[in-house]
Image (cartoon, rainbow over the protein chains, first blue to last red):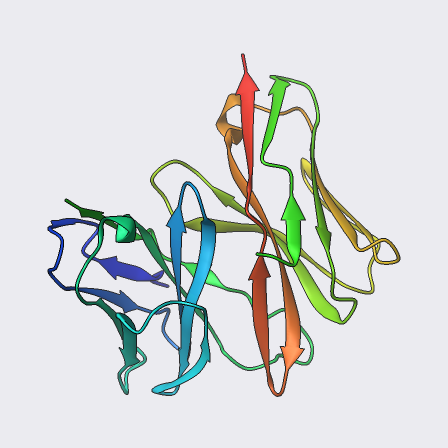
Length: 117
Length: 113
């Protein structure tokens, strides 16, 4: 079955612009989580969406936002880009509910690498 | 990843065993995971262990869990240059009717030929 698909894979923006990244989860997965990965800060949790609702949120400013559609696809948006927003943005999907008899596994996409100049 | 800690770097020679360590703080963790990230790629699930288990073996990979000390380790036998990557430890904690995931900062494994 198809994995988690993130688009675009690479993009370059300038300071002050805004960007939208897309994530298509594995079929049947209702949860989509977003992470920011930078060399200095490691893997930082941005937010999680489940059934079109933000269920969990990390400590990022309001410039970072997201949404989820009825088909579970998710987008994240960063407005007023800053140099420090340059990072690999990873999306992960999962079933989203605690599974009584097994692990709820996160499956990651290949990421969208954003460079802000 | 403030509640999950890993050392940042590990260097081994090809053919040796690698041991990557991780500590976590929440004793209510349900599952613990090891992910591998190769350059330019996303995270790939390697293996996971249920919190009531002590050990899990899968080919060259052995996971050891010491729940009393909240210590998790990943042993890679006969390490190859293709094992060079960043390895992330993660835990899931039950929250209401779903799980929250917490990641360590990753251990960069360098395998020298």
